[in-house]
Image 1 (tube, rainbow, N blue to C red):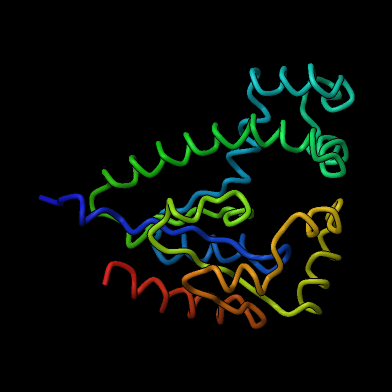
Image 2: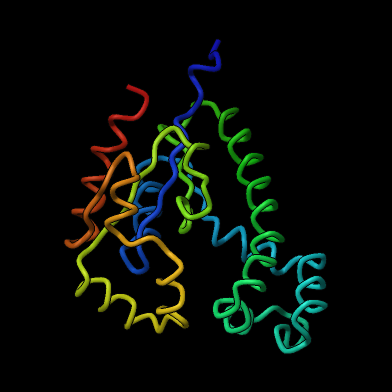
Length: 201
């Protein structure tokens, strides 16, 4: 029988904008880890009636054209306004945290257990969530690489979002494990495989 000490290692994955967090999460999934993206959880919450209605009440119909939340429109409202941003975070973060806890409990019941449960949290350290994980991993990349990736995706409000985040160096200093992502996806997956092999040891 597995006791508490045998729980699946719980990993918080973070990094700078366009450093490759999402690619790292996909690589962990290919390697057999259970994975969850808090961005995906937020997207799911924004499509729920309760949260959508609260956003429309707070920000107006412009954030939900046709009844569907426009994340870009919400970003335009909140990222330049600390009060609105804090209100939105207060609405979403407790719900995200609850969803993550429920997911972890489900993963811990899986047979056979996965080698790790990895949650991508872009604002892991900024939100003070690092203590909830057994291990934290920061994905980093050099500035030219990140600039090319961000430019190719057409991020909205990158400057504002980056100014709210810790720098890559600060994230790396706080993380238990730092993974550089400047090569191929195969390179990234090989390095993450090595990291995964140390879990629970």
